Amino acid sequence: MQRRSPEIDAIHAALAPPARRALDAIRRAVHAAAPGAEECLAYGMPAVRYEGKPLVAWRATAKHCAFHPLSGRTVADCADLLAGFDTGPGTVRFTPDGGLPKAIVTRMVALRIAENRTLGAAKGAKRTPTKAAKRAPAKGA
Image (cartoon, rainbow, N blue to C red; front, side):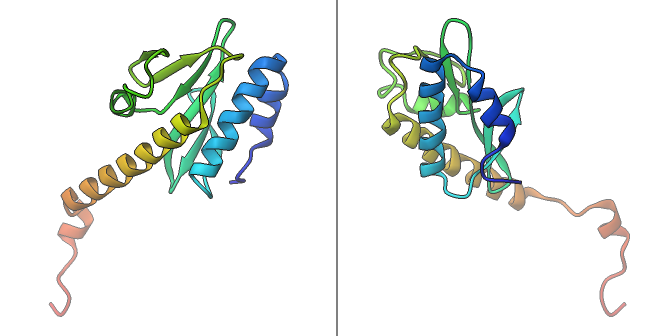
């Protein structure tokens, strides 16, 4: 997949100028914080995948813009940075004119990368052999 998606280019191009500027800034900040991230759509929103896992998404609505770290834990961990922003589980809402500071996006992306890596390592450690592997004869048998 391409680093930048023409589909997301089209979504951004259709936005009103204030929302486009705000979301373009989010997009640049995400790519700076996660070099090599691949753009995709997640739940119909512009998003990125990093190391093959969903990382963050963003969107504009009629009344606000939103950044979605796709994790309620990340929003909770950044509560001090998000004072003054409207937040919900896995969502930070902001006005297009006010934007979301790059430092906040960078911090949240870093937390999401760490969270994905931790979850991936935990899942890998807990894996049990598949049925086919259980049926396969041992080497040398």
